[in-house]
Length: 246
Image (cartoon, rainbow, N blue to C red; front, side, top):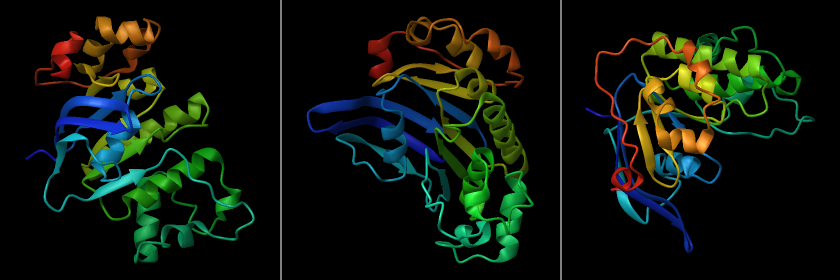
């Protein structure tokens, strides 16, 4: 059973249609990256999946009882607020200290439990947000530009940790990011959005697609040498905009 199935989804804000006729599905355990230029509807798609955006048409179907973890694009915490990592993680979750510690370990930062949130580096802060998303053992993680503000080594380390999370927990992952070469190299499947689904397939297939190259150029292609996944299933990439939108 698919964890998430999106059928003929369109989203509008007033007279502005940001997504039209989007269809996609996410299977258990896979890493799916959604790429696209600013304003292409990436975040709106995630908002629709978590129920924070109302479709103009179409629908989002979730597996019954699906547990979702969400890592936001940014979260501001008043630096003068004295709050430890443990307390932050337990603000809206009735969980034990062991649950917090286990989630931090899975996120790759096992020693931060007693640290003040205000003392964390940008990379540590994002790992704590990841741990908080993991604490209820989600079946799927949604990451919306989760490394915004990190330098390239920090971003690469974060996405390596995401692959480790998938290996350890078996959860599926949907990621949005502008760091195409890093994110695509960590993906099983890539969906290219520009108001509609332009192209979909393996990272190598999408990187060579005319519509992807029209949006992003060819500069990210060489970095896909990082891509090391073995695939035993077929991918498709429809580079015709109209057909992909239908």
